[in-house]
Length: 247
Image (cartoon, rainbow, N blue to C red; front, side, top):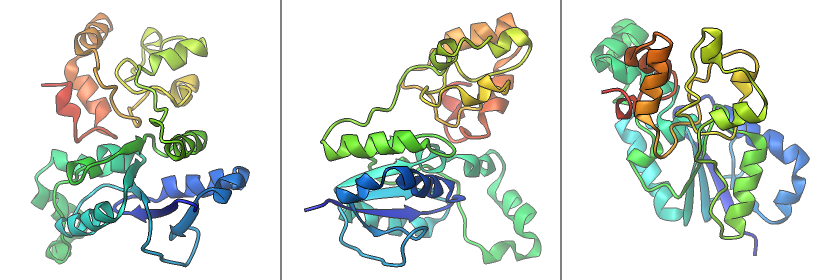
């Protein structure tokens, strides 16, 4: 029997799910071995019998927790899909300011109408078995992860600095060009897309497991930058866990 999979979304733009749809256009063979029973972006059916759950989006309301826990209870495998689910993502920027101030800024005199709390990644609420990083995810990496899960293998997500991707592409380091980049502490696997076009990495794939904090601080010092500069750069995607690097 085909394993059954379902896709769910919390607070997100759903761009990662659209990337999944895009990937299936060139990998239709995947549908020969996996049955999708729920996927709002692609089908109208809503089957509740699934073994694998792909969850996109961060958790931003207390009521989200009950729904997420129900998904976790049903799924044998739960995969965090993209930066919001994996890291808290862009939504976690609100954690840097008092929640009441953020609510009033966004909703004005209707602030009390909307429930919210500090943004957190999926793993802060339930156990996550695997994740696919990025904003959005990489279509080929999604396919590779699904194939690995089908074989009972560990998903092939890199755990080394993105600088290695840059070196493989023979890019000139952006620090040497007077710019800024989180490549030394960010997870590789994107092919260094942003630095290849002259834009510093903002860490959408998250930190590697053991980021070399001291080495990164030394690089900053060599180029006249401070830990606070790094913290500012990390807040686009890593506001939830920036304190792991900058204290």
